[in-house]
Amino acid sequence: MPQSHTMRVIEISKPGGPEVLVTAERAVPVPGEGEIVIRVAYAGVNRPDTLQRAGSYAPPPGASDLPGLECSGVVAEIGPGVSRWHIGDKVCALLPGGGYAEYVTTPAAHALPVPEGMDLRAAACLPETYFTVWTNVFDRGRLQAGERFLVHGGSSGIGTTAIQLAAARGARVFATAGNAEKCAACTELGAEVAINYREANFVEVLKAEGGANLILDMVGGSYLPRNVNALADDGRLVQIAFLTGPKVELNFAQLMMRRLTITGSTLRPQSVVAKARIAESLEREVWPLLATGRIAPIIDSEFAMEDAALAHARMETSEHIGKIVMKVSG
Ligand SMILES: NC(=O)c1ccc[n+]([C@@H]2O[C@H](COP(=O)([O-])OP(=O)(O)OC[C@H]3O[C@@H](n4cnc5c(N)ncnc54)[C@H](OP(=O)(O)O)[C@@H]3O)[C@@H](O)[C@H]2O)c1
Image (tube, rainbow, N blue to C red):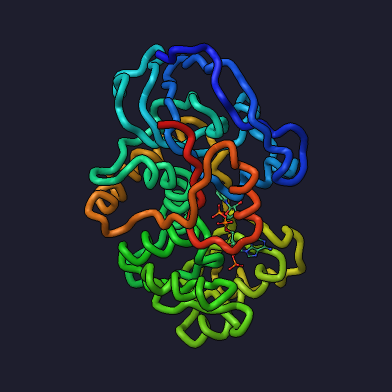
């Protein structure tokens, strides 16, 4: 149980640049039915947080207005109907929002144990990208061992997770990234080929290999028709963002002639039950790989919570490789 009824948080004072993130005091949240309160040790920083701050990605109804989609920490309070967790358990959790704070509530089913041998700093970097990659690459995208998998933004938080997981599960991984250093990071993580998109055409590289069986894309815009061209027959394209825009002219005849699938999803608005199912799959299929150290989060940089604006500015330079994390307490 928290000693004080108020906590330090980072608020979005108004839509805008990183400077609109300000430290404030709020009431410590109370857990509802099926929820836990976590005393946050570290909070992961994700690109959607910067979009929320800028005013272009509103939290879903009922979610905290505070940014922060993932954290690690210690269970501080338990709501009615929760049997799995006990006060003092070390967890990492997917959050509907509110992670930039000393305490946060989340459905108990969206928390996972900190993988064996991993510290809280690294564990904070797991939930958002692992939930997203699992549901889009393996559930929706049905990636199989031996298939050719292309991930754009290979050096991003999502990309570094997707490369490692896909390679660990036996896929042949191709990644795109914007400079030589990022490309080197992608190959170090398990990509067979890293394509510097400023110097080479990923469509030609993939076509020479027989096409991609699955593409995970966050870029959109002009990449949409190029992704379709880069797919093998029966290939799948999974869209998780449209960093360069969602509207484009596309010849859909190829979908029919080559039996292609275009799909996509966003994690945050999905139901508590749907996200709990993803958590179950991760604990069964992925947590053992994390415990062996076969895969691990790649951490670019750490900031104090009070420096949230600097963390966002770092993300918006796009110079980072992997995850940005904030230390909140302890
Ligand atoms: N659908 C979902 O459920 C879901 C969940 C989480 C995240 N996402 C999305 O997934 C993407 C990656 O998230 P993240 O947290 O891993 O972010 P991140 O680390 O900041 O990655 C974004 C990457 O995209 C690349 N990029 C290409 N074109 C870009 C552009 N026009 N503007 C900015 N970056 C561009 C950058 O790499 P280069 O320098 O190599 O271009 C950058 O590293 C974001 O778009 C995020 O909104 C979706």
